[in-house]
Length: 419
Image (tube, rainbow, N blue to C red; front, side, top):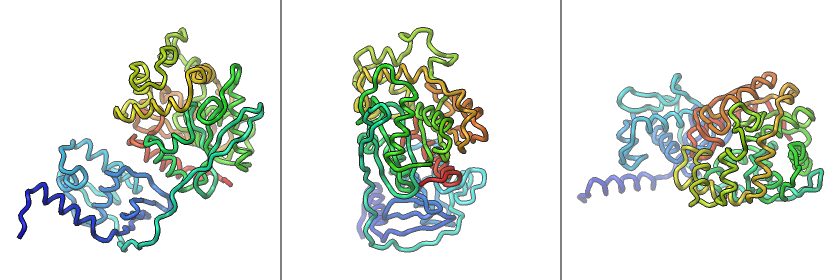
């Protein structure tokens, strides 16, 4: 009989576990594919963090049986010390991923002071050796806006078309491969034909010009939709992209089938009650003029990036800064900021007829949740979802990201006719 130190025995036990034939677990409309490391619910891909996936896997493997907290800590966190709050957060994320919640506990049940149990009926089958699905790829093309400005746009995935309007600091190639953004983008592309574009002055598109207006951005969105062959289509829009989508929906209602707005707003920061009296007091303008744009070692740049994603790790903040550097130069960023800070589509809100979901982070400091509430209140019958987050946009590591993605996909499938 071999005798191993406890730590080595745990590692060998775990290794033997993963050498077993991978299984597929089905329960309550969910399918968990261990080999493919995928979770689908009602046929739609659900993005999950690795630790959350492992928790669901362990509970499914032991359906009907108690899984203690100690076992989860050993298998998911390699025996490291973790807080009760961390465990609770991952369990909540697991419940959200499989369509459960802490009140009903119809799938994942808490056994007080002991652990957790999967109480849903689970069916198991062995995974086949069929080839993995082809890796998602995007194709980038160019189109011309009304004034002749070249706009880069991309297409990825298959299915109903959805146009995704990101914010003014984007880069089609770098965002697609970024650990901060790729999980959400690929989850959408697994369910839809995802159309994205770089706004003028960002990424692969041509520069913004002095005097360009919000209506030029609207024309850019129309040009991309036309080039992609979209007549009436749903839009997911983030930050100032929401204002662009709102104006288009108000002026050409026949083009927009529904709207999903993430941390969107109808008025720029310069028009809000909390606006700085002078532009030089704006920390973003001060940053741009400091010469530190895109430099991870610049204190101003890192402080501002931390405001954008307050809960990001040091490495994630560094990646964010580098994404911004790829997305825009200082001159274009200044032009964009001046335009964005002064935009106002409040009078357009009442003209929007498309079904609308407004999602906003409850603790966002750059664009407070009050701005999202104003948008939802101004659009007839708009739905409003406030999520527990401080992020300016919802990154892959944000605990609210899965909730936002699921709400977005559910709303699109329920309300939007797309091509």
